[in-house]
Length: 253
Image (cartoon, rainbow, N blue to C red; front, side, top):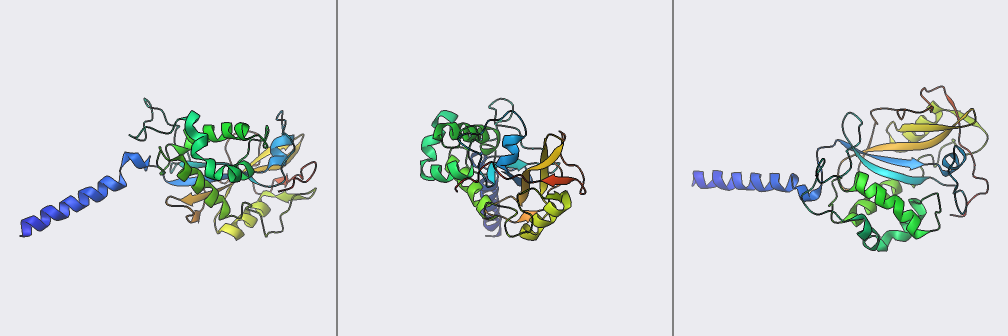
C-alpha cells in the first residue's frame, strides 16, 4: 500500500510539474512583466514621427514585456533561436480576427500614432508586439486574445494613467524626475522605470514603465530593477527637470 501511495504521489507531482512547465503556456523562465505606458505628445514632437489624424492627449500602451531578472526583455519568438513554445503560435496575418472582441479598446488604448484612427495601421503595432513579446509570455501562444486582454487589464489597474490623482500634470511646468517617480509610487506602491526624450534642449517625459509580478493580470506592482531606461539622451537622475507637454489640441477620449 505504501508503495502504491508513493507511486501515486510521484505521479501527481509529475503531472503538476508538467502543467507548470507546459511549453504550450509559453515561456515561464522570465521574472516579471514590464508595462510600458507612453505619452503621445512627447512621442509626436520629439522627432520625425508625424502623428495622424491628431496627437492624443492621454497615456497609451506601448507594450507588455516579459522581462528577465537582469532587466533584459525576453527575446522575440523564433522557431530556431528562441522556440519558447511547442504549440504553433498564431501568425501575424491571423491576429486581427482573434482580437475582434477587444479591437475598439485596443484602438483607443494601444494605438499606432502614425494613424490611430486606422484599424489596420493599429494592427501593425499589435502584430509587432505579439511576435516580440506576446508569444513568449505566460499566455498561450495560440490564444493572443488572452495576452492582449491581460495587457488591457494591467493598464486598467493603473486607470490607464500612472499619474492620475497626483499633482504632476501636463503643461508648461517642469517637474523633477523624482516628482514623477514619487507620483507613480503613490499610486502603485512601487518604483517605476522612466524614459525621457528631448524636444530641442528640453527633457520631456516619454514613457512610464510599471513592473508587475508574473501571473494572471492584474498582479502586484513591484520595483523595477532600473529606474531609468538605458541608452539615448534621456533623463538619468532624480534632479533632471522634465516637461510633460500638452497635445497641440486636446484629443477627445
